[in-house]
Length: 458
Image (cartoon, rainbow, N blue to C red; front, side, top):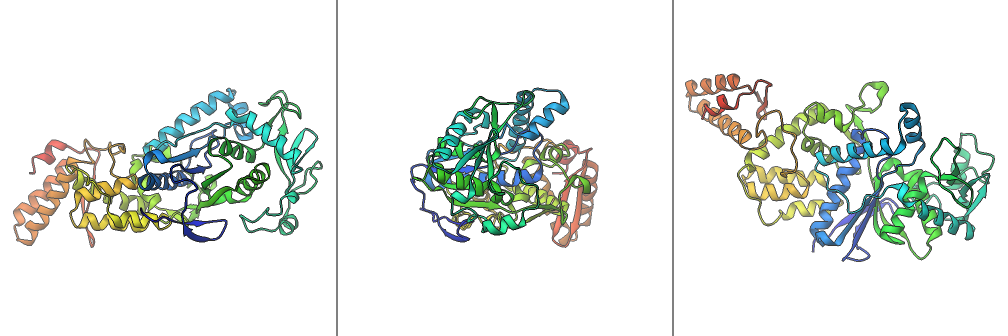
């Protein structure tokens, strides 16, 4: 069996992955708050942990991996959107979940085993609050239930922060009902204009952190293998999840391995609407960037490192995938994935090393091996479309263009300039834009692409 080594944020080191139960490997990843389209930064953890999901299924078997990713469908941002647009909350969250599924499907992400909605687990959240109060880890104040961080000596271990330092650094006004500035809300009151549920402390709604703990416990148990998300969630969200879960269920350890992907920048700058570099996955898809290209770019940097999204990377990924799809268009995938690809992914999900091996397979002309191995990264699969700028752009058309480019190169070397010029002019007439670079010829399809004229160049 392939050895998998993972970096654990909690221990700050890599270690061999040893599942609690190899017959049921369990992973929880924090999902979106559903009030708007997912931006490209939101897509990174989806692609990262989808790749890990694929690796775990490859190693342990499809039926032996349980993957949970939640939807936060009760939140003040959702409430504000509903009030702004004059629409129902359920209408907004249902629509946004539909958008999310469509966009993530376009990136080749497999659906998790379970996708719980927070509003379906309110009873479990209330029960967890009651347990925490009974055990002295939470208290009621002015209709709120708050977790007492001082009751959990391990608080701050995940993010490597001390309570004294956090208290000293707190710059926001502290609510008067808090015993400690770092105490966080588990339950809060709702007025008549806000969504709410009856509870022992009055009509209210859950705080953000409690929902993941309740859903993870219900679906995965008191102890499970992997908890994932973006590095921005390590504190306070994951720190708070860990504290309340371990206090409510001391018989378990909550998550054994904590994994976090790095931040995303755009052209070297933080993505923000004020800088004009903010875009959603839907924006890219609408501009004609195939979902497979987006996935490739997100996997081209190691998941723990910051990633810089650039147009140059998009263009390079497009060229690479076109060539690979041309090579594999008529090929049947090999029965086995290249061992070097599996080993690279097993080494803390080293996707850049895995992609380098795919390049080697392509260079060696191993179409079957390339197709099978790329599929483990969610690439070159039939489910991934988006190459709609030309009929069959990801298959026979791509293969023909690559063949004709090779023929043009051979004609030049043989000083058959008549054939080389005929191919050059034929490409232009067919709407295939060919550019010669130091690394070789690249191509793209113009809006006026004519497949019949390209076929006539054979």
